[in-house]
Each structure stands twice: as C-alpha cells, then as structure tokens.
Length: 322
Ligand code: SF4
Ligand code: MG
Image (cartoon, rainbow, N blue to C red):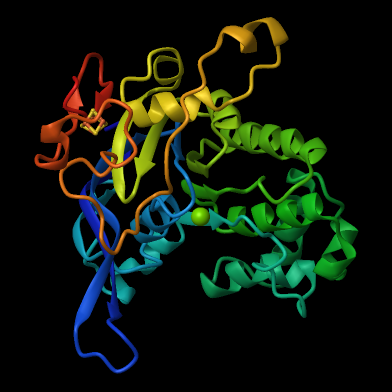
C-alpha cells in the first residue's frame, strides 16, 4: 500500500470556559472534520494563515494532542484511539521538527545528549554504539562530531535547526512533521535547510508533512499541497496543479499575494485583497467559513457548508462555485 498516513474526519476541539468562573464550556474548533492522505516518500505541504489549524492538525495526527473525533490510520493501523502504551512503537516512527529550534532544545543538555535522549527512551543504543550513532547523525546534518560535547547556545539558528533535525532522525522515523522549520531562520539559511531536508528524504526514504504559511517555498518542496482556512481543509491538489489552477477563492487570494520577482508581470497581476480578519474559531461563520471574506460569496454560502469535491485527478476543493 503506498499510503503511509490517512486521516478521516479528524476533529480537534479545545474546550474553554466562558468567563472566569463560568460553567458553560465553549469549544475552539481548531481542526474541524479534515480528511486527507499522505503517500509513502512524498511531501504534503499544508498552508494557511496563522491560527487556521495546520499545526494542530500536525500535532493531533501524531498524537501529541488527543483527537476529539475521527480516524488516524498510520501504516495500516488505526492509532487515533490507541493508549499511550499501544502508541509506543508508533512514536518512534513519527517525529516532529519545530519552528523555533532553540525553544525545543533543552539548553542544559549537551548536543550529544539531546540527540542521544531519543535513543535512550526507545532503548535503541548505548555506550560506544550510541556515541557512534550521534556522531554519524551530526555529520548527516552537516555538523561536526565534536559538536556533541557543546551546548545549544553555542550554535547559530540554522545550526540549532540541524540539531533538531538530527534529534528527530535518531529513532529512524518514517514520517516527519516539519512545522514551519525555516520561518524563524535567516533567508540566507532557509534554502540550505530545505535542501538538506530534501537530501535526507531521498537518502532515508522519509515522508514529510511540511507546514508553512509561505506558499512560495512550499511549491518547490511539496508533491501535493493542502490549504486550510479556519479549521477546514478547503483545497488539496498536486503542487503544480494547485499553483497553476487554484480552484478555491481562498487559495486564489493567497497565491495572488505572492510577490512576483519580474516587475513587468507584477503590473498586470491582480492582487486579490481579502477584507477583514480571519474570524474567531470560537464562533466561525455558518455555511462556508470563508463567506465573510470571500469576493464571490453568494446567499447560499452562509447557509450551506460546501463539501470537498473532486474536480479532476484528485484535485479537491470545497466551494459552491465548483
Ligand atoms: Fe466563496 Fe461561497 Fe465558495 Fe465559500 S462557498 S469560497 S463563500 S463562493
Ligand atoms: Mg503554527
């Protein structure tokens, strides 16, 4: 089977109490009925403005958060409702690389121990073998074996992200969620880290979910791309298809905001400006969640929720215009 991971109708609601001493519970519907799959060895990009639920989707599907509802099928096993003990062998197969490498590294541990900790937890290696694996991982991510005895603060942002990547690789995962791994880095370093992730994918046969708000970068590293808005997946397609023929008005607006380097083109390009802010996920608009900002909104948009529809070759979008 060439599908490594599939989520069906995934929901993640966060309960919050109304007012300080209120008894009423409200729910932030951070991820609300999202379905997609990721094939083995591919990169699925997941984009959308901050707060759209893309990080929550990532964290829920590797069970860093408990799903509220829905199925998560990893390598043929339904892991959505597994106990912590049942999850253990799967924990090793799924890792995460975080946006802020510094915040995610224990600053009081040496780089070697940060990487080695994962080996210890899963009892993968000890003694001399452990040291060898750590040195090998450091070389894999372009650092030196002697960096193992140094501390995170001695490294630059790009190097810290490399340490984070080495740590994720330590347990030989099959699937890695890259949660905005380059957005905190200098532009000059971003391409290096992205290229390295691509090389590692080839070498180790990794499958990625690559979360980003920057659509221009995602285009070149993703085989397919999904677009989220306010807890919903609104469009998903092969990367080229999505960028050449975006079907959902929200995707069209996001793409129109990417600056084009050629000054002649930018004169003729129509930038679609979206009015207003993203509504609160506590109280999302009824019908299509994009209806308060959509330039094409019709009466039925606020009444009936559009469902995801295949508009050809696996290109799916949720909009009444289609
Ligand atoms: Fe716009 Fe209506 Fe389509 Fe939603 S369903 S994206 S509001 S046209
Ligand atoms: Mg995020």
